[in-house]
Image (tube, rainbow, N blue to C red; front, side, top):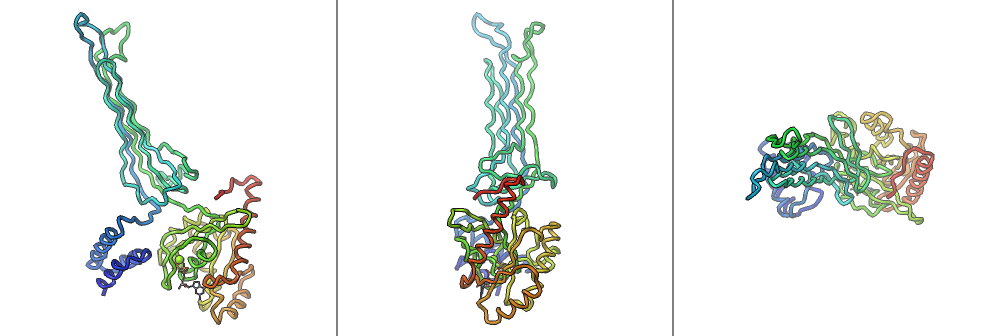
Length: 387
Ligand SMILES: Nc1nc2c(ncn2[C@@H]2O[C@H](COP(=O)(O)OP(=O)(O)OP(=O)(O)O)[C@@H](O)[C@H]2O)c(=O)[nH]1
Ligand SMILES: [Mg+2]
């Protein structure tokens, strides 16, 4: 049955279904796992090396070592004792992490980076060439951590962080020439490059984050209010990586909205897809809670979502927010909405992501939140991200 399923996936090549396989991978026993791994390779070959979205990576950086200095003496016809002429070695290449807005995931990163070594010096006072720096291009919003502590946040295009220094080159014997010592024999080796083990984490940068149970219609809503096209399907956990869409207003103001995977009760205990992907809404200034009106008790969803958010980071659920009741087109929705309103003191925005009903109210409310956030920014609480 599973083999048949894999074959179907390979032949149809739907972009979202490769992720379904991850869920299967966690659940099936060993024999079947191998089969899935095989199908995954075939899938990649067929679609031409497509890579998955990766939002965290551990990398080891070893900067280039300095080239060694050389001990040599000039000796030419009629100038047999020309003195020391050993040149210095070149410096090793450093490793630099650079933010690049054209890079969208950490998938292209490799586990180990080795910087270019400096060249050794030469006779006739020739200095060795310095090793060229190695650049690691990462998406905007990448956080660089060392032993769990954040050391830099790459938020601007072109921002660079020198992560591992190259070793300095050794000195040739010419360097040691002095009045006391006219023929130094000393030459030093280059220093080894710095070694670092860093964790890179990608945190999506958006103003608003859609939070909701699986199948609540988060991706559908993102499609309805922005031009983003995340996959939508009637099974839970369709979305496995964040998508960002931009809501454009007439005055050219733009608000970025991030869609993330669904959260279920007990996600902090690693149920469902866990809550580690909440890192993608950690930076969001406001949250859009999407409740599913087709669920028996949509108001309990809100409690569970808030609880799970607070498990990730205390106070996360208290960010400025909008509560959206989705699937208003369903027949029983109106009745449910009234009950929902009686359970929640905050304003509830009823919408239908499927038909686009009442999405204007949501878009306008989003703008109110955004304007409030901009004013807050003006009063000195950090610069707002301009998209
Ligand atoms: N009737 C109705 N169905 C909807 C509406 N919005 C979404 N759906 C359906 O609900 C199902 C799930 O929608 P998605 O947008 O994939 O839900 P999601 O919250 O992104 O789900 P995950 O990515 O799995 O967390 C799909 O079959 C949608 O067609 C709506 O407003 N009305
Ligand atoms: Mg989705």
